[in-house]
Length: 252
Image 1: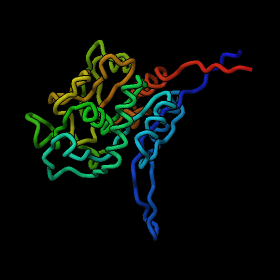
Image 2: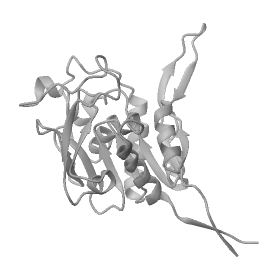
Image 3: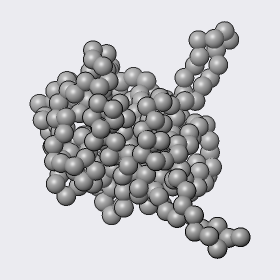
């Protein structure tokens, strides 16, 4: 028997795009910054396509060592009893379906999980929470959080305050950090199985962790875009990879 460690496999959900070729081609993909951050943290990213049946998605999660839920468009409002605000956009109901299955399965199987921006919102809705459909317009005292069209993705828009005993504070090395801000929605009602661990100056929840789970955290900002300019942000991916790491034993 030889004890052997391997790099953990991190399953990443994807989005659907249509190419500008003629005729157009459907593409399932993911921005390279997520993959780069996982690799830099010592993991191996594995992309999970849309369109799969629930049983197949559950089987994939079972085979993964950890899961990443990335950013993207808005969730279909009817899922969380939303009103369908005019600013809602980029809805993909199959992506919603796939990511709800993946999120719930990862939580049920105690798989290490990192949820980013839309991913945090998916995690909250999948576990029974709801969203502000537009933070700036609907949340009392809500400020403008959507800087995606006006600033670089590395722009630090505001600070967040972290709970001292949280996984976020441990991985980021402090109780306050400046973050980028590329979203217009956010958590309204927090799911019962989540704990708020980071808040923005306007009171919006910007970080969560799953209660009684070894490592399942979500952030409303985009740390994958900050690993070079704000190196401590790589700590979130290192935390995921470290939690997903375990020795693999082979026999010969």
